[in-house]
Image (tube, rainbow, N blue to C red; front, side, top):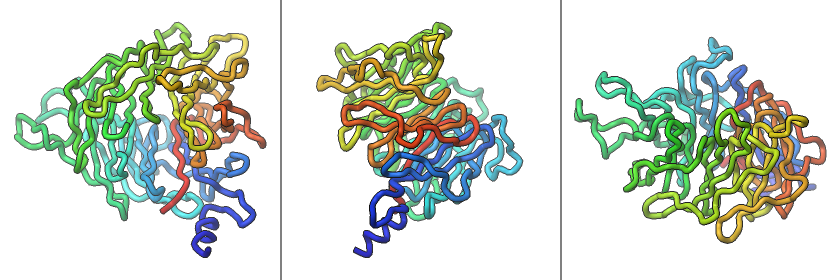
Length: 408
């Protein structure tokens, strides 16, 4: 009983029920900050946590990931940007900032780390929580040679007690000039996003609309499968995410056409880490939504059989707005639009990323206008405005966000 009461007090809950169900952190590039919120169990309302906003540690924060257990978070700072950099502990170059998570979700900066390439843009944690993968758009040169065309993944092991990162060398490939092991794992050209599905890792490469597949192994090693790169099937792929047994790619369509775009679902080949197309799989986005940039697999309760797509624009010039379009995953893996007449659902301007709260009741988008939009999820997958208002002020030019339901 004492343990239950202690945990409830740590999360802000009371004996009457309700209170804080989780914590949220939202990145913003205008001031290089992280806005922190507590998520209310009953309403989904967001309340700023003490001392928020926090410094992002580095310039132009674009990706954030929580180590399982909730004790540490890592922020990928792309570098450069327009915000103030004089007071940033990691400076203006690309970096990874480590933070510890304290009571009420308060962040404390710990240390700076650097990836092996340049222009880091995304991060992910493996399924064990022991390794952090950081995606660089540009791989380093070998022994002073010209920069290669490809990007890379820098792998770090995570100390379970301190969260400190230690570089993992590529034991499979050596620098031909020096004979030393590479300090990174090569991927395709100009990668933008990365997704982990079981024992597989995929990077989305924007230069040629391709996917680089790796199998994740012991000691943090990544192993290229028989196919080192394959076509995504998208015209202008904008995101890749995993959920359930599927992998989903958003396709914004041809540039400068205000195309509604489409969503491409795949299944994963467990032994080869291949992405297998589904018959009748590609589905058009829901009009008038346009420019899809991110997707999320979620659903109320334990059911994860809905896919939500964040759209930055619309084909309806008389009612310009950003939105979330919603689909249900059918038993054969295909997607079916739900809630006709209400879908897509309006959100703040320029959504960038989405998360579902730890209790699977609410969905949130981080928006480029510096806000967060919250929606409640019905058992049928429909989205509705929160009971006490769905718009919350975060920090300028918000990029991505992350949530955690506990701090172990």
